Length: 267
Image (cartoon, rainbow, N blue to C red; front, side, top):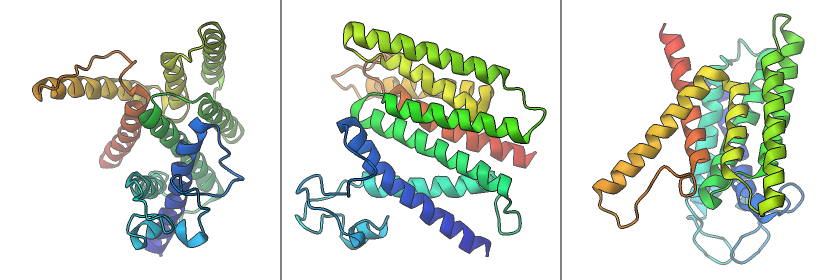
């Protein structure tokens, strides 16, 4: 029964992954992500239901559009697979099985799933466009407030003071970023990354977030080192103008949370 439950959770995660591929493509283009049907970005043909079954449609169509035969990027398949795996890992971390499904566990799983969506959106958009979209930040802020209120309601010992302080910091950074955007016409990438970090604190707390920052620095350093070893003509540096820091942070944060939970089980 547990196997069937986790297969269902994987399928649910892959459906979210399919939506995330759509969202990461449309959000930077200011296109609707909820009311407009999916379409092929090459021939603009509206996709039928059989064209949009996560993972299976990509395999059965041979990685090509049914209508114009244009090759579909494998990132669609990869994101759907990763999203499904992420949901399964989340269910495992929350200790969900057929014998322990309770309302609190379901709610905790739901907030975790919403956070996974946040990480995927931040990472996907940063990878493709090297930017942190403010609409995704607002989404992250909303689920952070919801998560804080949830713990405030169910846990009488929960102290919201430090989270309220983080919310005030986010509000200040957003005001600063908005002012900079109006003044210079440029959205400050570094300020947006700071907001991503604070939202991470809401869901994974300070220690995991700090370790995520350390791992991000290591990823950037290894990338610079690998570039030098390979003697590429273009030199990398730690300047955020050419490093997808938000992407690395999201990857590092996910891995750190998994690692910390594995350690807690071993102990």
